[in-house]
View: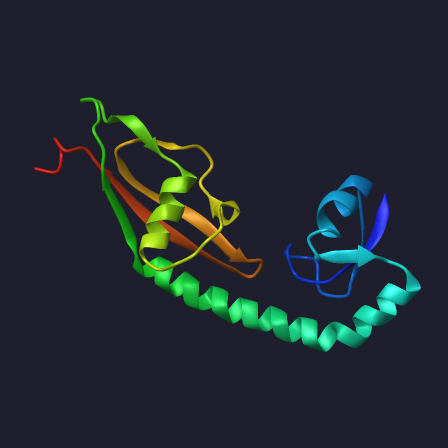
Length: 152
């Protein structure tokens, strides 16, 4: 296990500047290379304490940007017509890529990892997909899947 100092909020209970214990591989392969944390040495802890105000300001900026994006997403409705069998089962499916593409067409850039779809949508009907834009900001996109037969 490795002790690291968190540089940005990315889990709900991890605040900037806190020291947390994580598995060695998680620290070495993800947290440190992505700039989300540093090893918890005395030098790094002191350095982060001095940078904490600017890191918090950056986090507040990210949070406000995420809030604006969330309000745009909440106002949208993704309606798609896909060929389906008589029982409502689709011949294709709706995946995270389809959702990210739809948002991109509406001038909203969201990474695939933020979209919490779970399993692909494989039937007609109405669905709601959660999107986590920031540890403290999430929203949902309403999706309606129609079959060309049912949309008459």
